[in-house]
Amino acid sequence: MAENATANNIDTAKSFPELQPATRVLLGPGPSNVNSRVMRAMAAPVVGHLDPDFVRVMEDIKKLLRAVFQTANEITFPVSGTGSAGMETALMNLLEEGDEVVIGVNGVFGERMADAAGRLGARVHRVEAEWGRVIEPERIEAALKAANQPKLLGIVHAETSTGALQPVATLGAMAHRYGALMLLDAVTSLACVPVEIDRWEVDACYSCTQKGLSAPPGLSPVTFSARALAAVRARKSKCRSWYFDLAMIEKYWGAERVYHHTAPITMNYALYEALRIVTEEGLDARFRRHQENAAALQAGLSALGLEPAAQEGHRLPQLAVVKVPSGIDDAQVRAELLRNFNIEIAGGLGPFKGKVWRIGTLGESSRREHVTLVLGALETILASMGVEVARGAALAAADRAYRQSAGA
Ligand SMILES: *Cc1c(COP(=O)(O)O)cnc(C)c1O
Image (cartoon, rainbow, N blue to C red; front, side, top):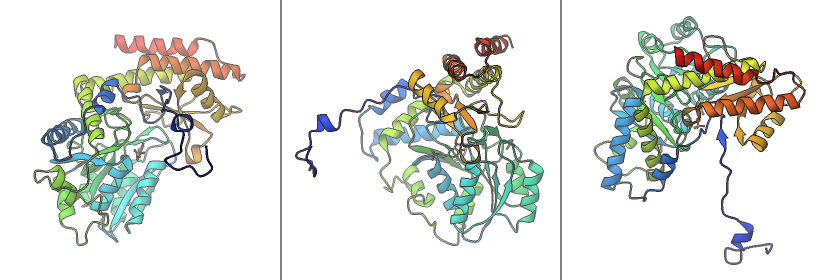
């Protein structure tokens, strides 16, 4: 090909072959495997963002999202962007310069929320806990008490960097006792474990499409309570973001249908189908499936001598985070899993880099055959590296866990 190729003289077929990504077993913390029904929905014709057929899809998505978030909140819709876009939408609209906020930080995603709030000029009170541990409610309450008229309490439900599940059911009422709004990051929890927005008095919550919902990445379902909307309406200053300004987006997703930005039509088809799959299965059955596969995976990992990194009693059923055995090269194991077994798992972030593996069984990826596959693959790879593993013990332990949950 010529040094300075123009679009006219590129040999496309030779230089830029057709896309052929592998079909992987996605057992990282997201994206999770996508159901073929969702991929088929994405092949539906693209229509205009105000087309009556698309407006119907928008209305149905709002209804389905309310069911999955377990809320009656009118303002429940998908922000155009990944999970982090939902986080920015919540913070940008709820916070103003100088507001005091309390944010729980015990991993990467609490850190991210604190960073984003600080960028908006909020005064951030961090409540920290060691990575892998949850934050004790008494410490959160002490921080709310110490803050001067706290505007918001921000908490991560499922901390994807450590595998810890934060107890949050009482935090909404606690925030309200101090006059604060409750913001919940449910990016890795929604559709894997219960997320009960109304019962838990959560005022704002954001999630994503590529984890528990098992659609491709690209949208961030959010929901806002009446109390949150009152705070948005009472702002003294305009929302600092044009793109994420709830007052404008609301006019497009609400009855007025005023153009704001062009909704990603195809991604909304994907979300619609993914939500249909969730409601067909039913939330309780879905949560049970995640529990059963997690119990079997954890039993198998323990049989391989891999210890969980998160606090006992607070481990995510959709993401096992285990310590890398000493002397084992984390990246080499992951590379062999991908190359020889077609399995993606993730390594650690920040202080956990090189120290843990994160094995996700989210949404569509939460299947018995995936649990069996990854346990067999890990056993083979670890044995080849000289780790003493009792051959067959992991699969036997997983099998026992499945029999136990079937009998329960
Ligand atoms: C993945 C994740 C995010 C960020 O979502 P993106 O879709 O990557 O922007 C935020 N919070 C948690 C807990 C996550 O796991």
